[in-house]
Picture 1: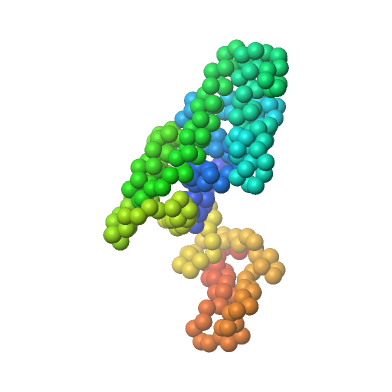
Picture 2: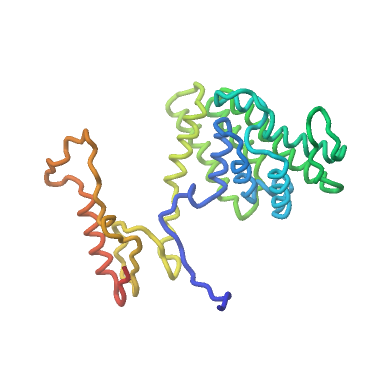
Length: 299
């Protein structure tokens, strides 16, 4: 197989949030108070290169940290009080703070039992510097969790968002447009509240909902037709002649779509001229795609 061969393609109709792991991680950080701090949650954050590099870590460091975290018994919970948030008794074992204590004791003392804590002695020598950088990351999460409990108006949330980017992400030429998009959403929040003459506090849940809605509407659909192979959804105005048109996911019973009406939908069964019909729309879009295929139609 010639691995140098490459088919140029573009994917359209994908929202900015779906396309960028940075945006997903940013919303995850804002939702930190609702997190159980599972290993998967923390790993998902560290898998974002901008976060990893911000704390001076690389991929090899990440692999070694995963080994330490798994073997030291860390499972979930920031500290012993994390379980109380979920109506559970206080439990320090298997939390992040407990696991880090095991690593630090193992680095400092070896395998000698101390204060009923069994040290984890795999961290040795120069690896202590790596452990220190990872502790900086956990400290930043602890500080963020405390800050998220405050009350802020739109202007203060704007400063909060700007600071969150600086604290957790390493910005460069490759990702600067993503951070510009995030800052723009905070700027829009301030301008909208000023236009409405609203100066009260904005709750964190409202902020997150606003960011999710605004980021989900930001798409890269303007990149349609920029590559030799274009992946897109069936939608109006896409009926452009192509040599080959491939339709995927055309399973029996799934296309055309049959939308099951809600029980309280009084319009169901009493359709009038002009009422929307997803099934008829899908049939028309299929006809457009069929007419657009110049040489081949693949279903």
